[in-house]
Image (cartoon, rainbow, N blue to C red; front, side, top):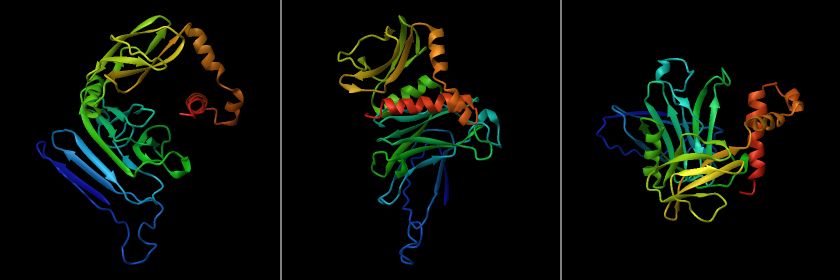
Length: 294
């Protein structure tokens, strides 16, 4: 099923649809009797503007529930490359209450896709024809497949698409959308003692360094201890979207430690792809092991 709708800029459009795959009164195994089901809904504005979507299902039999966004990503055939999206790493808070993806175009027509109301997380698919060369889609999930054994949420997902001028404008839009403050910086780290200037979006009364109980005032942070520091913007007692900064004592020793983390035995067992197998995947696994209690 594939539905397309084009709206004028001034239109307010309410759309609701009940999906009943299969015939209700034909055979008891036909209703939802499928392994994979896909339905598409395409809404375009003639002159841009925000779009808001809400999806839900009463069926608890669905193992995974989410939305697939097959954006025109860089590398796909057809059309001008200047109007193709680049996928920056999506942001998700630890509790899943804030999840967004900032998508940029060489032409400057950027977009942010943001989930409101919580989500399990996101995934993306590589092209099945040119693996690793371009992204096929971006997916937001209210619930991952049960095989992942992640906590179950309601089968409900709300998300919005906003056209934005740049990343600062993106964070301003997100601060209004979520109703909490966001932080940004020019640099996200440096040598111990580096003073990192912070920018706040939305109403922000200060920020809290993770592990500390007293909020800090001002718009700068001195990276004193080696390692990472999580900074949480505050609006009174309301917590915003955290950011992470880091500090190092010596850049060469930091580089050596990162290289020493690569195990030659692992390289021999894989396809020898140092980037994919020895940096990203082990780093993510180590992070999961460190934070498995949270």
